[in-house]
Length: 179
Ligand code: INI
Image 1 (cartoon, helix red, strand yellow):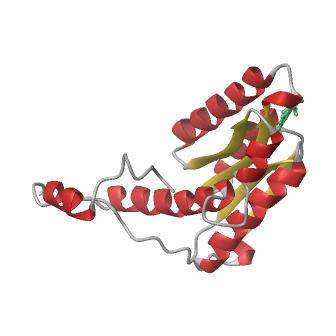
Image 2 (cartoon, rainbow, N blue to C red):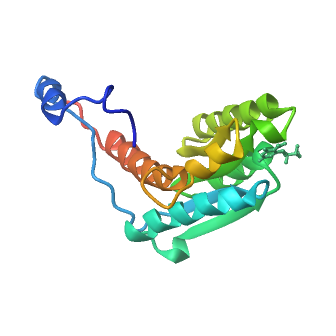
């Protein structure tokens, strides 16, 4: 789910704007030949393993080879950006970060969650490799469980789909020919 029904446009609304310009980049995704790094936090691993399951389901169904997926387990969300940077420097097409920061469990929730998000954004902008933020930041364990269910609302599934989409967007922008 990318947005709520209240904030979604119809296909026809989007097509109306697309007809007004020459180039529209909204590519279809294809996992074939894509190398993906997944960084997964061990902290709250009962939750992050559910996110990982969802992410792998989507990647493998999209045609990404199991040989082209590497998983790096790190102690917690604070360490996620460091490992994401290591993957980005090793030639992956995208990095998916998976973590669970739960406010009820930590007095330094804001620091851990905030630094993780900032670090992930820094890595993708500094390296030019898409780094997807699949880190749950919730008030309660119940909310974390709800966002890691085995269905399309699973944040890991959503993050894997976003990774493939961003690879395709980056590729198509790179192919743009201004004429
Ligand atoms: N790491 C998490 O991934 N989630 C949390 O909820 C969490 N809490 O509660 O503190 C957490 N802390 C560990 C942190 O990410 C680092 O691993 C640790 O501070 C060592 O740098």
